[in-house]
Length: 210
Image (tube, rainbow, N blue to C red):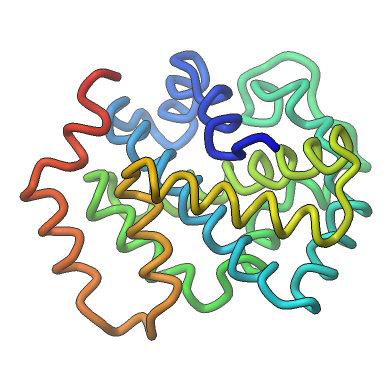
């Protein structure tokens, strides 16, 4: 079973990061890359949390079957506004990043944006725009894996749980931070946790070679 984080990382190459930077107003490329990986971690953690209940897993499965077949990944630059063939009108729900975020994060969205902005150095408005752009990509990847692997409701939940678990075991501080953020009340010491993580150089270690 594949690791969704690694699969998504494979799509966030230099050209895509440059396109994302341009789309959110000419942001710093390194900050954009850090924010993008933080967003992917947060959304995968949120999806895994939602799919941990039978109702949540069934709702996610229905959304994938209805709107997210993975075809957006075949025209990623077009989806991100980078030219080429534009997505078809019938893909409007698949491209509705704001709606996707509402389902995944709910009232945690603003807190997630603040956390990711602190980690990446990107201002909150650009982080919010970037999150809206990347949400369809995350759902499209999940839909692609559902189709390719023939996953049912339990299979989707298992894929998400395994992805989050593998990343945490591998020492990905972003996944660990995202999981802890989504598991707590949202009014704890997350900003102190972020500051501590940055002080220990964990982010620079993670992204230093990229």
